[in-house]
Length: 215
Image (tube, rainbow, N blue to C red; front, side):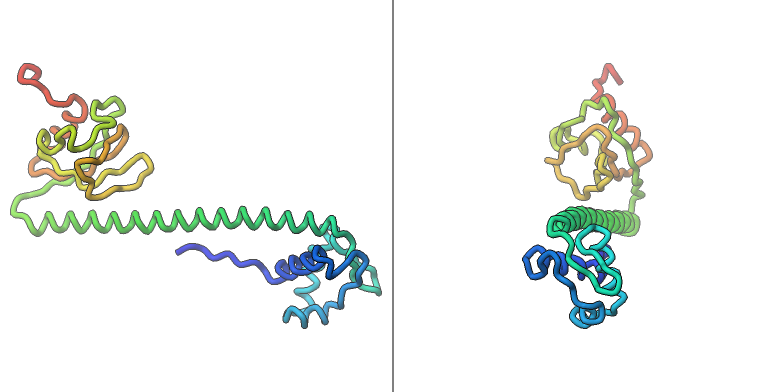
C-alpha cells in the first residue's frame, strides 16, 4: 500500500497567509490579526499559528514587533516563499508517485511468485510423471539473443516448457508466447520431464542445434 504524505496544519496556514499577501488582501505593512483570532479563523490553537508565523518570519515574509504584533514585511519574499514550497511539493509528489509504482511492482511480483508456486503445485499433483523446474540465464554471447521463442523452436529442440522469463529489470513475465523476444541475461524458468532437460536447454542456448558430426 502506498504511503500517504500529509502537510502539517501550520505549513498550510503559512501558505494561506502567504497567498493572501500575494493577492493583496494583506498589503505590505499590514498588521496581522492576533494569534488567538487567527487560531479561531483556522480552527487551530494559538501555538499552531505561532509556528506558521515563525516560518514566514524566517523567510522574511513577515516581521514581529514586541508588544505590537506581526506585520507583513515583503511581497517579494512572499513570492519566493510560495515558489519554494511549490517546487518542494512537486518533488514530494514525484517521490510519492515513485513509491506507489514500487509498491505496485512489489505487489505484482508477489502475485507472479504465487502464480508460479501454484503452477508448480499443479504439475506436482496433476501429472503422473515427475516434473523438474529449473532456471537458467541466457549467456551474454548467446546466438538466441534478440530472437523470439517461436523463431528458434525452443520446445522442439529442448523439450522444455518456459514458465516465466525474468528480465534484466528483475520483473518476471509469465505465460510468454511464441512471439516473446529473448535477450542475453534473461533468466528462464522452465519445466522438463527428465534430468537431462537442463543440459539440453543450456547447450541449446550456448551452441544452438548441433549437427550429427558435432555430436
